[in-house]
Length: 337
Ligand SMILES: NC(=O)c1ccc[n+]([C@@H]2O[C@H](COP(=O)([O-])OP(=O)(O)OC[C@H]3O[C@@H](n4cnc5c(N)ncnc54)[C@H](OP(=O)(O)O)[C@@H]3O)[C@@H](O)[C@H]2O)c1
Image (cartoon, rainbow, N blue to C red; front, side, top):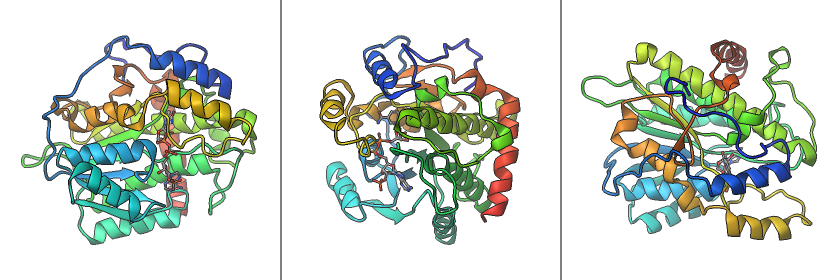
């Protein structure tokens, strides 16, 4: 997220302004391996660490749950569907019985708060949080509170969850006895091609159809990346690592993300995804690295594109955007407690 090491930033290939350019970029990115970091020591363990993963019943989130469970984590899958089947599958695939599912609809602020109440009441302490849930709707839809769905799930839910977990002590900063917990945001390179956030219309519902879906997806991931940068900055003044905050784009994944694409596109998109995109298991690699590599607990603000460390967009790194995003969203948090 910072650009201290003159990390490369910017969209690759032709950007992510539309579906076609996004697919071309995804294919380009899939086969580029410039400046790759890692790999993670196959024996790196997280025994006894509590890991919460949102959207863990499908695609990338489920693969992350399995791999963190295989490394010894206690897994909490925060999901709105697939309960209990997905949890049973994660237990079976990982051989780790320490897996539970909690229900949450991240589009609904009331449901988000209920999840937080339950974690607080049970005195759960999260060591590794993977904020993974995401979607790509065919057209603009409203959340129960009237926000655009991607804004609600990609940004607002994460903003509320972190606010609550920090104030409830569900995530506690490092001290002499405990290493820094880690918060990992699953973002997207699509944020690099986004127009700036218009703070004069912050959180306003905007109508869009299929043609502009990718543009809005990128915009909500820009909200997320700007938040991740600002959170990292606020939690770790002077770069004294109290809570490690990282983000990543997993690259193109053959998952269920395009589930809403129209019937006439599916026969083309399905085989392209299967053939050229990575499996969720492969795509989980940067998340597992950020979650488990010892060195990633001693620093904050890294952004990986697949296994390549790079810089987020200048918009996401601009502190004045971070401050404005924080202040505007604080008003939403106060309004929807
Ligand atoms: N696929 C790609 O090429 C790609 C590329 C870059 C970044 N990403 C990011 O990777 C992440 C994982 O996506 P994926 O590719 O694994 O897609 P996926 O298979 O569709 O998984 C998305 C997950 O998010 C959950 N989710 C969506 N809305 C939710 C809500 N309101 N409340 C609770 N959970 C909700 C889904 O739950 P349900 O099953 O209940 O809907 C599902 O578990 C997303 O953040 C996505 O933006 C994906």
